[in-house]
Image 1 (cartoon, one colour):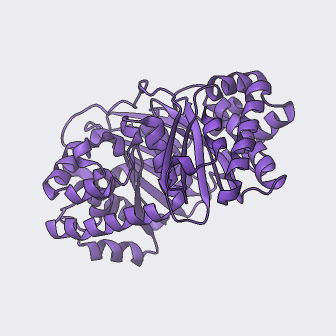
Image 2: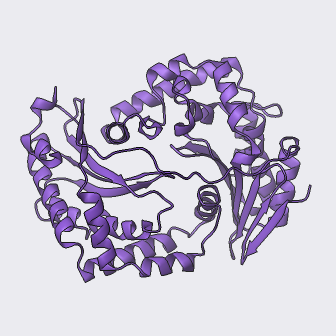
Image 3: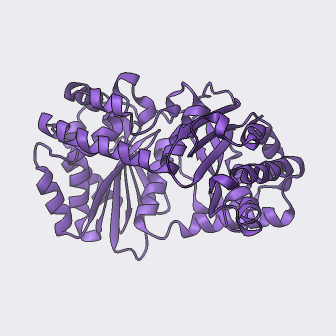
Length: 435
């Protein structure tokens, strides 16, 4: 089977098969390994409410056996070559991936294609894994920071699908039938929604040939690849407070605002802003909350970017008795940043952090595989590292200040997990922070 179109840029090569499956590869000089990932444009946001948690549930089930392999055979084959085989689910996508020695590339591709294309979803396995997924939800509930993030997303995004937890809920997972899962699997896990990415000591022709051999029975149709998600989510910034009572010894606070989506050219500006705000040891939050006052062990800011919306959030974990002061300090940091923007020194430091994170984060085959897989799935185009570095270098103090004012003057949403029976038990400073 010949590709419908081939594009090449340096060591990056891309093919689109008639079925709509895209294959992208990156050859890495000196590598002795290969990383393979099948990226699927299906995440928790694509689940109807009746099957909430289905994408993550399938992440468990697809490894439980196919038409050609039992679950034990899948595990034995990857272990026999010292490789790794795993998967993850996000709000936007799902990825099934493997890393092996370069000589075992064909096996890795065959395993990934097999579990994605021909999983059986045996009824007995559905019931076994239901218990495992419910245990994972219980573990999430026992991890205050993970629970906090889900509570924050629910408060920030409201009824939008991004507000739902990736794992689903105990109620939704308990109610999911094998038939509903199978329909979801066969309806959405199709070639036009998939990207096969491979990086390391690989050649594009070898990857293409292996994909056609392993996935050929699913490549007989003709379709256009699904376009990268775009749009503008109907999410309005709002003053909201979500409280989840918990018997933990610490109080966990997350607050933030809606931010720009991943297609916005200002994403590099936001990256510099985030680095200066709470992205490292020299950031304002780390210095003010931890270094100068010793109020918390962990404090940081983070950016989440989706196709149609994003978020800028701040996390701090502290003793309940210090929560009021932490809230005041965070409020002061945000107010100063909104009013004055960044200094030239902070700008340079933020750019340096982004440059280092970009380049140092591409030191192995799995990182390159992730980079090209996400670029193809999310943008349908590929920037070189040099392009990315130039865009980081082009960020100005004025751009950061303008974006800080745009984002941080919005109403703030907050979530708290800790030893509080109700919102009246929280210090007044939390309400003042989001007022």
